[in-house]
Image (cartoon, rainbow, N blue to C red):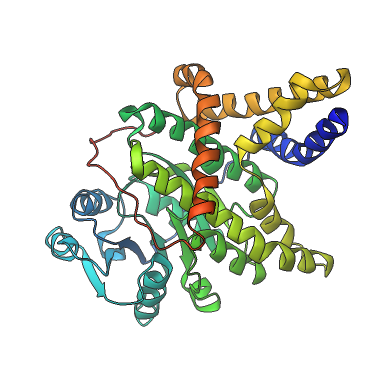
Length: 389
């Protein structure tokens, strides 16, 4: 019975491990794009904000530092059901402000703002969270990608405050994998890079064809499913980034993790069956969505490999160890390429605690909260950073 259980765990971990292996190999054949001299397109930077008075001035100030034609860009803050001074501070900082009341939510706010801005002459729309900094060449790189034919773009998404706690260091490594190395690998393999909710851009044509009707707690994954259904692939920009402040710990970290993982469960339930039907009907892009939807959390893959490596038969132990080595290589490359190798070594000892904590907060949430409300993540003011990694 034990050997059968270990075999089931290895089978469940097999495809995710092969996917991680592909993301390790694919960047080795990454091709560079020749520079473009295309005229600057008009790009609006949309900043959804709910009670972000603490950080909005810093975010707006950073976004205005783009090395891009000033007349071809505008920072637009969507002050969504705010009860603080977010709108006034954003306006005083130089942003255009769209205020809305009722029907709260990031997806709902983006839908209303895009409908308004589509009445103007914008060529593309870049969505940036209210706690974020943007690489100074981001709009120039986006403009180049648009000239090459991209209709939806996700740039590399990292952590703005990695030095503030052990958890933010762990998040730096996690985002180096999930928001950088994996989408880079998918992009090289001609698979849609996906949308990570921050630092993604859509063209005017895309916004018209695929309205932002994504209102769940994981509206980014939901909108990616809509794009794939329309046959639109998301391209990835690796050389420019958006970096967001992560919660240092405590309730902010718990709320964020619950929202992400519970949202993923809801997405699997809602979209996996229709993606499978689309795949069997011959829709090639459906497999791109299935990769996003069915990829289990890394913590579960780790457990599914660790148990056979410790308690399986000889062959199962070998396969479990091999899978763990692939995972280790994936995170090592992510740390070297995008993060901090020294902290990668230090965080190895943090992994067991993180797996236990993550499993506990998600399971306890599922037992105590059948329906999740719209939750805002608690944040703290961040220090300035000059990191251009």
